[in-house]
Image (cartoon, rainbow, N blue to C red; front, side, top):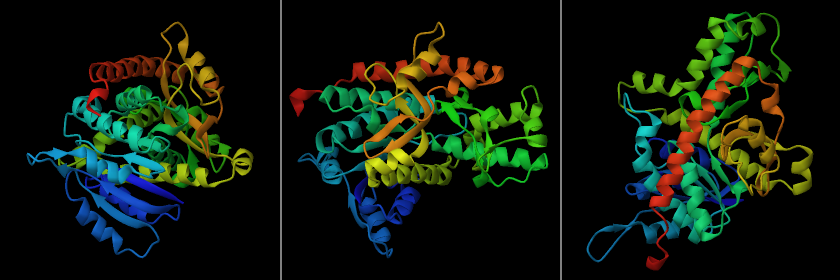
Length: 374
């Protein structure tokens, strides 16, 4: 049973995410933090007849009546076991995740700083886009405080996995293979932005078995169905932005995906070590795989991605979750079994990821922790 913090709880993702977390049997206390409206959101959720106690936290005002995040954030974070961060500005038509970087990176930096000081052993789940860059920002802040553990910091890429299952089930159904979205599993690796998202459809399964027959033909390399499906998975967020006529982005599906991943982390943390080793809870997530990563198998994934290019330090891959977080890469040899078509997608993704990661590291270097002000 865990205290969970939602940082950005009053926003379009934060409110439905908070609602879902209020329903979780693994949450004993739900602390909602944002710059506005959290007392009202907390009051509303507190009327729901589930066990989790709900509190709302705002930035406090300074003597000059200026908002200062420290006190309210400290109140929210103290004693937290899991912190999930949907805070940030939403995408608008024509805006990529990378366009959001400067604003959202600053928000993530502030929250990571608070986590490092007030909840250094908490699991930190980052939704704020662009995840490819904001996760490195958070990691560098935690490093400066000496509390970074690669097993406990996650970029939430679950929405890509959810979309892959949903969209693939549609293609399979059209091909004559009855497959509900929750029957379908597609490993999705890489990052969380456009062409950095790589669905490994050659390894898709339906009810635990590899896709075969007419379904396999529809997913075969070179078919228009496969190319269209990959593009839809990679750019599915654009569908929502356009359908909302600029009025918002994928808030509800992202809230569901964030909850799905948070619930997996909480469930794994509640399972005894021996039981989690026998039947691990698994999920795809964007993690640090660079030198010194405590995630077992990270070095093998990094080596498989190198192939003449500078090695990547972050990558989304299926992991096994346990009481300490991401214990190990579920299948370190996964990337050695991809199709030639997917290998090409991975090469494109690696170039984009390298640039995204570099952007996050550069931001962190320009905005180091000022320990003299603490």
